[in-house]
Structure formats: C-alpha cells, structure tokens
Image (cartoon, rainbow, N blue to C red):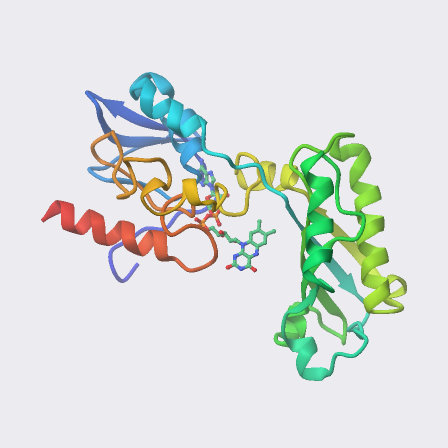
Length: 269
Ligand SMILES: Cc1cc2nc3c(=O)[nH]c(=O)nc-3n(C[C@H](O)[C@H](O)[C@H](O)COP(=O)(O)OP(=O)(O)OC[C@H]3O[C@@H](n4cnc5c(N)ncnc54)[C@H](O)[C@@H]3O)c2cc1C
C-alpha cells in the first residue's frame, strides 16, 4: 500500500477484456470491471488464453501452441495433523527439521514412476517430507505436529478414477510412511491428500501440474510458455505473463515475476 498498490484477495478474474487487439482490463467473478494499461497474468498460461481471453481474440497458430503445452501433473500433496512429532528411523533431531526424502535408490524412483505411465499410482511412492511445526510451533500448538509431503507419482488421470483410487493411494502412502516412521499411523488426527485433480480444482491449474506445464527440454527456455513467446509479452498488446508457466518455470523462486516486471519496464522505455 505504501507503494500505492491495492492488493485484493478472493476476487477471481473471470475474463480479460480485449478491445481492438489490446488487453484493456479484467472482469471479476462478481461482475466488477477494472480497466488498466497493463495486465499481468500470473496464472497458468492455458487458463489465461483459453479461458480468460478466449480463442476468438487470438490467432489460431498461437491458440494451437497453447493447447499443446503438456501440463498433466503427477505429484500429490499430503498433509497430516499429528498428536506429536513422528520419529523417522535413523534420522536425528536436525534431520527432522530438514527435508526427509523417501527414495531408497534411483531404481526405486524409476519403479515408482512406471505405473503412472499407465494411469496407476505408485504402490511404494517416493516422498519428500517436512515437519513445518518443528520450525514454527504456532502451526500445531500443544506439542502436536503438522507433516507436509510431496508424494510421487500420482497421475492426473488415474485409470480407475480418483474417487475410487484416492483411499487406496492414501493407504499405500501411509504404509510407506509407517515403514520409515513406525507408529505414525496411530498418531494421525487429521489427513488431507490432494491429487493433481484436486490441485487443478482448488488452484484453477489445468492438469494440476505443479509448474503450470512440464519442465521438459521442448517446454523450457525460449520455448516457455510456447515457442516464439518467451519474453513475457503476448500476442495481445498490454497483456503479459508472469507465472511458473513462463521461463524459468516453477518453484517458489519468484523469477518469472521478476523477469516479467523487468520486461514490462523495459518495453515501456
Ligand atoms: C504438490 C506440490 C509441491 C510443490 N513443492 C515445491 C517445493 O518443494 N519447492 C518449490 O520450490 N516449489 C514447489 N512446488 C511448485 C511451486 O509451488 C509452484 O511452481 C509455484 O507455486 C508457482 O507459483 P506461481 O505464483 O507461478 O503460481 P501459483 O502458486 O499457482 O499461483 C497462482 C495463483 O493464482 C490464483 N488464480 C488462478 N486463477 C485465478 C483467477 N482466474 N483469478 C484470480 N486468481 C487466480 C490461484 O488460485 C493461485 O493462488 C510444488 C507444487 C505442488 C503442487
């Protein structure tokens, strides 16, 4: 606010207004219209163009490129509320404060990935576990503990459907955790498992991909988000991109946003 900026939350953008080939504003879900000279979209590029702008306002070649971005997620997120901190075998107190990776060998990771190619979840998932309340006790008062884990691999399109598959996947995850932190199952107070389908719905991320698009060679660097448009500007004057879908991609680096800001300032000369 000191910088003269108003930040508004819980007001999703329903549409980007385009007039004469230029983005000139947004319409919020509640119908309110906001006009601006520069619009920066820090959400998934496919949502930006296919839903908020709409294919009618952009040329078919660009639309096709956007439709072809591969963005089917394969990572799930587990949250556990525990009565007390779990004890991972062989890990000391300092280890528990860091990131605990369950991936016994490169072969194990490979084997865990294989089922996801055929629409199945990993029966022995690879996990990256953190216990955030060990660093910030206010997250779980009274000696309780929260566990947060990235769980791989969970294909966006599970063959049997996530309604049927989710309880089974959770069972496999808990069995894997039990093997490394014996007794953890008995101290679980509450469980939340987010599959890529849940992530898609909750965060409006098509495919539920954690980086708004796979980070593979053909979708990186000058080809991110699509070939020919890696500079944060877009075919629509006044509209810029700034999310993980742009170079250099996902992770909580803030780099796409910083690069986009620099680009916008440079273009305004
Ligand atoms: C399971 C999982 C684990 C991860 N683990 C790590 C990790 O350990 N380390 C790491 O660095 N990164 C991790 N990531 C990746 C990282 O979280 C993302 O790459 C990063 O959050 C992307 O940031 P962003 O701001 O570009 O997009 P997002 O974080 O997706 O933010 C976009 C925001 O825009 C909102 N939005 C969408 N549509 C609209 C709309 N129409 N109007 C208004 N708002 C809208 C969304 O709700 C969301 O809040 C993980 C991601 C997942 C899913």
